Length: 139
Image (cartoon, rainbow, N blue to C red; front, side, top):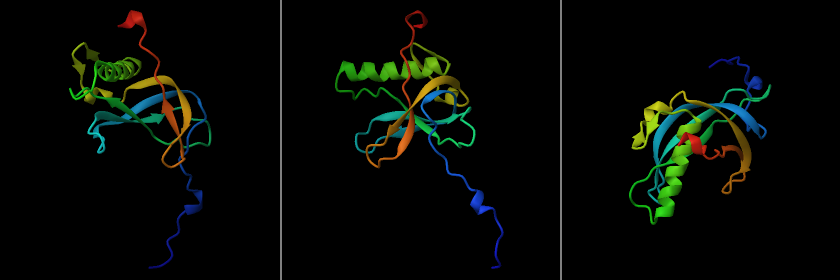
């Protein structure tokens, strides 16, 4: 095969964005189950829409936990419901007191603060979302 001319030197790796406030969009939402524990969630792949110039942002993976009836206590159940409510509220995803449709996640947007955290298992840096509580008047 002859030499294939490509601009390989122009390739830019994705990276974390500095901590700050960003416009975010859900690009995918898929069921996810942890092999070790069997816990279930919706894994949302989120894009940063307004990254600083020169940065191609890495995707952010945010897990929305699901209540399965296997929770060891009421506190665990409430934590899962609280994290669901925060994600649904702040991303403007339709829901009611009985649940939601994960198909509504796709394309949902929110302006949120991103943090930069270190992955404990490999030391890589990544962006994470820490959603604030749902305002009392919105419940």
